[in-house]
Image (cartoon, rainbow, N blue to C red; front, side, top):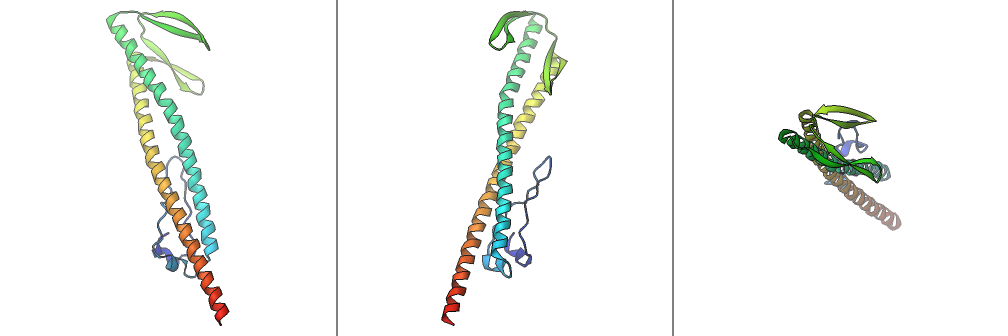
Length: 192
């Protein structure tokens, strides 16, 4: 929504695409008077308000995804360390003594010797058995993907915050310009 698009009659609405971010960036309106030429300011403001609601919805979704990812990352790191520990103990032939959770708050000591496999929860009630090296590779890939998702989330959040700020500034400038235009029209109506 730049001043170049002053001839169009509306403001582009944000477009969300499943699986990725395909939201057009809110563009700063350089010349509000030229942009509003022949347009209804109230209609443009309502379209910008709708865009703002969409941006805020996307922002909230990104915050929720970030929280879920930040929760998942320590679990993955811990699982990687546990599998590395089991591999070290297997190579040295030592037994591993651990506290095994029987129920919430109820633990029993367990001695693990010669562990060759681990069972990993994949989600949706699915658990699969993996060899130690294969499990380590899978967990490290998942950890790397988790970190990449966090980076993408941060970039997307910054993009949306910028779009929100630009849209809010555009709304204020359009509102103020329209208010000034109406005052001038009202004053010129009195002096005639």
